[in-house]
Length: 85
Image (cartoon, rainbow, N blue to C red; front, side, top):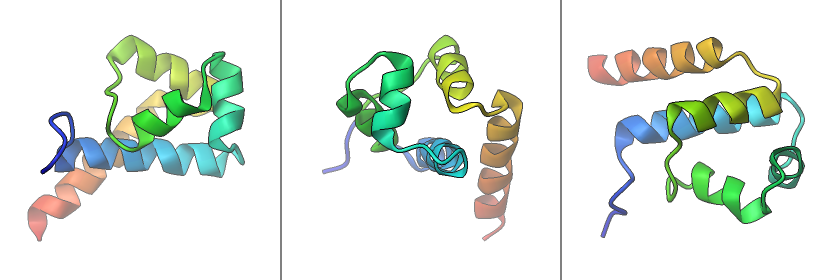
């Protein structure tokens, strides 16, 4: 049974966050330390078990060192590509 907060469009968002984190050379633990949260917090976000609101997203993007607009653009592009399939 799918998780209630998990959807294909949200998966595009989590994949973009994971890609940004990895591009920054950060492990989940590193990001969690920057956020002053447990590693499980990052894991739950990346697995789609916990959604981020806009303010939280901006904080996470800042902790990664990523431009939030770039992440949103990547998500939009992924969704556009998937819609064409």
